[in-house]
Length: 401
Image 1 (tube, rainbow, N blue to C red):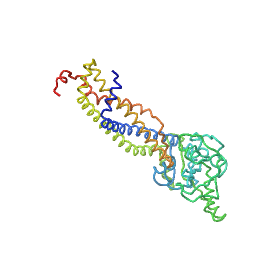
Image 2 (tube, rainbow, N blue to C red):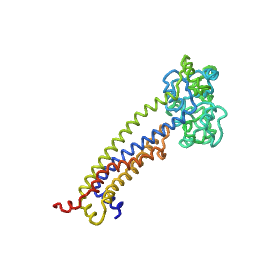
Image 3 (cartoon, one colour):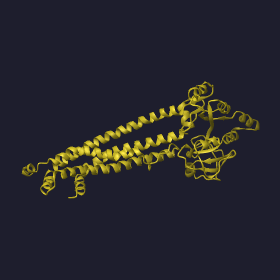
Image 4 (cartoon, rainbow, N blue to C red):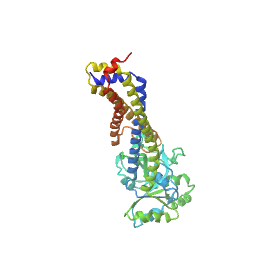
């Protein structure tokens, strides 16, 4: 007697009940898989982008906004700060490195970031094709920008005023792509990087009415944000306080603000995880009720199997195999649903030039899903299988029809 084939036939003898159980299992396991995939990838991406940045300095405003704008490039900056702040911070004895950033323009939704070569070194970004910029209005593009926007070394493009990609184009001051970066798995993949002087030159050319006006603008040059690395761990205690005491400066500690951000995101993931757990409990109850009634309805069939020589444990295994089929199908469909939802969210975020999510990725925590589904099925089938094991053949055959 082939238990797998017979249990499969029994399973689909009640298609509506089976489909309901599969739907509940798929939704529950899919929700759990989606939470695991999205949360782990987002956390890993955040940690990569923050690596090596001890402090972000910008204009007075929200510390969270400084982190989102300066590190993840997901928000607008709080304003600009004087260029002299760069030299002031670099001269501070507790500062190991200062990387300035100037924002203001974009191309097809990708931000044009004026900075120094230290920014490339910080993220270990390497040139895949071409070379790094060496003068104003030269730029290198991240791997995702090159792939999506179709830019390559030698191409020219005009930036658009603003970070949303819908402003006025700076057609008189186009950029020349000198290089394409290798994929880094960081925010650099979604950026167009150029020299600080490029950003100043573009905006001075767009706003200056004469040479005298251009000179005045050159004297008032600003940067948007500063990424700071401490020289000593003791700087974490005193440097933020010193920065905040300056009239035009605001500091933000990435570790603190990111912890707040992940806690806020964690509320949503906890809700979704709880929703998945409730669905799995309902699915377990539904499988239990279905198998319990199936054993009672198939009493005569099971009695006939006993008469044909099947031992009691074989009948118990028959019921258990139905639960196994549900667990296997539910696991496959649930994982497919979780990865599909992650891929859908990833495509939406990519269209918004936001954090990357890969639906094809696999996180180690997902290995716990198949055993969990099997344990759930075994728990649901335990009592029905015990019923089948203790089946009284004589009573069933003597019962009036």
